[in-house]
Image (cartoon, rainbow, N blue to C red; front, side, top):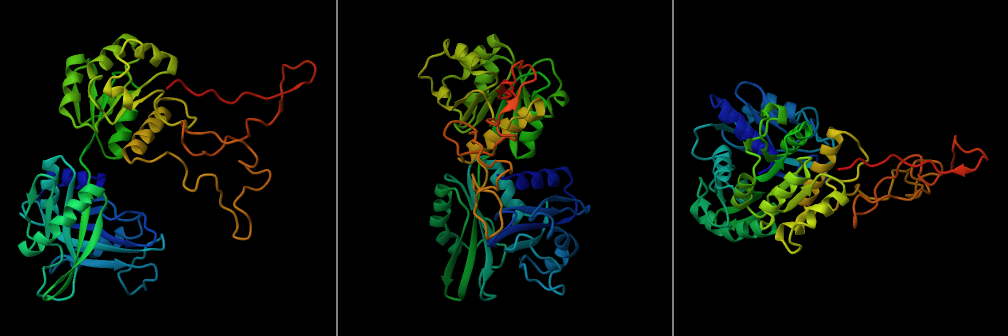
Length: 421
């Protein structure tokens, strides 16, 4: 489940009273800031949760969403060439965005909120099928839904005949783990159904009790992780307000790891070699998707010497943790660590978009100008096997005169040392 869906459910649970407006991106054509499945909730109290763009469409939905959805769910198309007399907003990224706008209530048995609540209760990858277009009024109405996981189904309010035809496509979306749209020809006309893939909750266990845990917890929760902290003698507030806490003991950590799916993530950052070894020994037979150990490589090698080399958990081991972003301090380390978590979860190699290229005029080549940062300088890699990343400036191979040189020998000044992650 994405961040928007979690925030929407949390906001409704906290204050369910009133009629709210829910906007969901159900289609994009060309460039867009958010992908299909992004959500914006306009709460009855007036506050907003989530987003459907970078800020160019939200105002129109807040001011007009209730009016648009007064007679039922509707799909509004926002195009870059919109006139001021249209919906009053245009996407800034140059693409076209289709947004389903509907009025929702906390106690409704069908609709967008009901579907999200059912998916959240399953805690498994799920697909929500939503009608987003029809060619005749006799066809299923916009906003009708059903949802399913690999082992369960929520009928919702979608017509049974259409729901039955959607089942093969629902399973295909669950296998491919990618949202899609399909057209169905019915006797009365044609309908379009948007199949939204929602991943299972992303769970992270942070094992540690010192001040550097807090920025990891805050940043991970901000991008949608459910964070559990194993600590003892420290308040939740001091540790960044995680979703839950467990004791910092081997049995508690082992129980958490065994109760979770194989794609849970674990970060060990106790700053104690003996405690790290105790924790790793407790989870070494599990199969996490990501296992990070804070500290330099030589320290981790000492830990590995005490563990079975063929243990399943070690296949996911990362040490030092995080991407090589060159930062220093708890916040910078947390940024590099969560960035690596995101890359691992999304099965991406962490690299800049169009790695190795810089923005130049259309008449020039893609290479940087002479004298610009990156021109002629060797490129560093984020981690083994990753594409090239932007260079440091000045280039590390540029000779600089050392102040301590008595004979005027030109020496290369060493670059900043990477912190021990």
